[in-house]
View: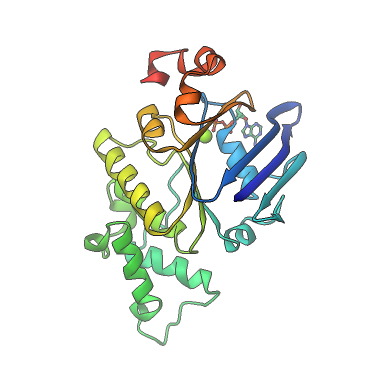
Length: 251
Ligand code: ADP
Ligand code: MG
């Protein structure tokens, strides 16, 4: 079953076409990677899907409902959540409060000053802390966590809406090799535990080829190949424009 269907998607930034007539589908339960050189349009593509940018042309539908240019928070409510390329947490709150606040916002409640602070959504907060492996850090100030742990926290926040589809934009950017393997194992485990469909961008090819069921290659705003890791790896055009172009990208 197709959960996300994108047709003829285009965005023109005043003459610069960053996404050009893209057709794309995401199947229920798959782990789909979008790869491509810096500036290929990966983040822009995600922004178009999640309502952060309005396309010049084309449609995005999620579970057969058109979501083109719907407000981001409405798209999240439908079950399509994302994490950002840059960290998106409340740096001065504790880890616990970060997650709790997301849950309170989800439920459209306000923080209740008359009930003991920690009581609201406490169990669910604890569940999410455990899911992302931050139960020992619950009282720490989020902004003081190591980078990899901040990304784990961000993941917990994106899971607060109970999404069915999760978009991750470079989840391991800026991480050490050690943090990268922890983060990837975690995402894999969570995807399985919560039966999530994953769409992610990633620059580390060992991560991409290690976890993706399907890979699409974006180049100058166009999808030039889409298929299994083996099919994409041996695609002559992909090798020419991307995987073959530098040892770095193919590593
Ligand atoms: P990637 O995530 O693949 O590295 P981006 O989607 O961030 O690429 O950017 C794709 C291209 O679109 C880049 O050339 C970038 O400079 C351009 N771009 C992105 N956002 C905007 C914007 N708001 N206005 C103009 N150009 C943009
Ligand atoms: Mg990007």
